[in-house]
Length: 541
Image (tube, rainbow, N blue to C red; front, top):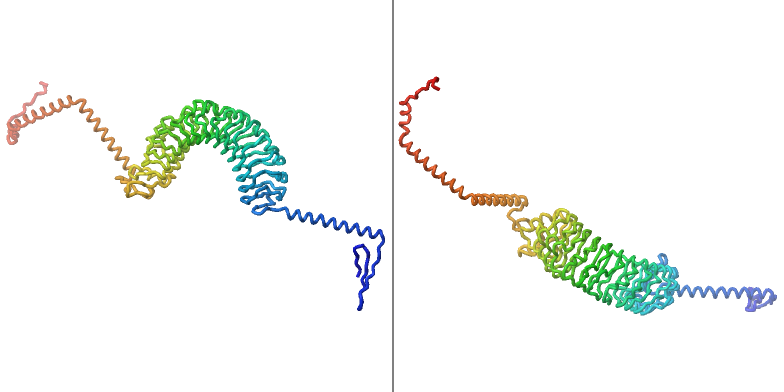
């Protein structure tokens, strides 16, 4: 058997029955060098292979994560991570790290240059080092909400040239400095809600030429940051509710000519200047709910000629007077929910709003009735929502029911009597929610749909028969009234006519009586026979 020893010598082994003989032959120097080089190469190759195997073993999906190498999506939600993992596939495009314990954004992002979506919400982020996103040129959405960020600067988001959505909601930001977002030219949505922002530089939003949606709600703003809006000419949606301002000055939203949606809910507003909405000719949706308005701001709303959706519940007004929404000719939906002082809606309250399609009157605990005709004259009304009010009955004359497609009346203390017979007859032909009776006691909790006209105490179940009877009674009343009026007006003449009639009747009766006595019936024929009628000659005529 031939082997090679450690020196590169060729050795032969000869075996016999009694001993083993080994003989070695020393190779030439040239042969020995060649074999040493080959051996070195083998060792070098083996070292590289082992290193690659070690790296491959280290790379992978961390415990508690889901990694999909086909879609390039990694989700590590509630995985107890305290740092951003660096062992992920470098080609990932979507990284979700919600609800972990990550405290900072480190250099790990430099390994993932194809990221398009990153969610770091609900972590423990305290700060973001400068240039942390320098290599994320493809990133489009960055969610940093629900963290502990107290400050950011104009270099925090350096490198995010493609970013369209930035979510910083529910952090501890207090101030927005000049040019803070100027390096985000493609940003379309910026959420700064639920922070502690009390000061905004007039040029804080400078450079956001593509911004369409801005959230500033639930902060510590004492006045409307009107100067800051001047650079947001493309803004379409603004949320500034839940702040500390109680009034809107003239032209409070100057510069926002393209604004379509405005939310000022829950802001404690008690005063709106006459020209607060001046220039907002493109506004389509306005939310004024949950404020302290004691009356409908009719004149102020009149500037919003294109308004289609108005939410104005949870305020302090007690009635809707005639023409409350004058000028809002394009209004299609109005929502008055939770107006605890609202008691009455007058006829013509929506008289100028002929395009209304949906009226929502919900949870107005003092609203017991609608005036007859309060909703008449709305040819496009399709949905009427009257849930959770204090209606005991509903008159058929409240609105024109012909075009109505849906009526919601649940959770009202409905009194089921004959006044609701029209509604009972309409239930099967219209989409009306289940109406439960509250009174009388014998019908409590019963569905109006299951009742009959007799159950409602109606004498005549057929509405046409009722109409005929009512028409007859009304006609008879009118005729009797006219006759009485005639007799009263001409009572003297009637009295004289009746007097003459009675006197003549008595005189005729007396003469006839005497005549009957002078010529008895027995003698009348005899007397006629005894007297011949003298013929009158023709010549004498």
